[in-house]
Length: 228
Image 1 (cartoon, rainbow, N blue to C red):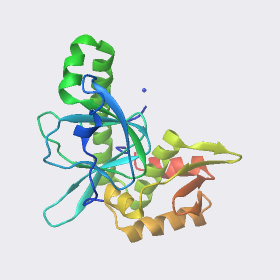
Image 2 (tube, rainbow, N blue to C red):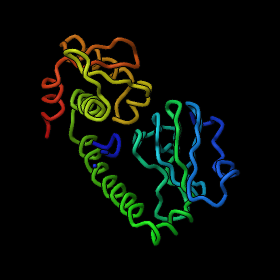
Image 3 (cartoon, rainbow, N blue to C red):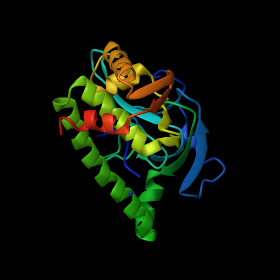
């Protein structure tokens, strides 16, 4: 499922990557921070930089001509966004929460391939994982029911960032219901209704709109895998 790569608001003021290297022009990367809602890059921009998420969550998306949006992925710490096969970005990228990112100049990491085989392998493994995860996401969008989609989404986040608390495994849900709907190809109402159903079935608890605690992991996994 294409939520993030496994580890092994439009109109917002964008981060200006050119300024991130003002104090370190000779280095191949630099660490910077951005607030929630800031845009890292837009579709069609020159793909001069690649971003590694160190803290927080970022979202990649595309907007159709009629204004509909498809969220492509949510990137968590350890994920990389901005890889491009040509000189342009092919999606928008925004910070869902406050983030810390490592920014690579494209010409710098291209040169680094020759000098740092480890970095080359890191990008290659990530790009390969992206292809596999996107295939899983396409399968999920086309073949799973609403309940199966939401359960799959929660399960990936549980496996990725879940923290064991007594008899529950909890994780933050920084993205909005609208983000989740646009990622899963559902409506906001369907997302809310499905989460309520999972709560009533004692699969999950919702302490607040941005926090999920899974009470029955086996039950959630069974729902997520029922169409596999």
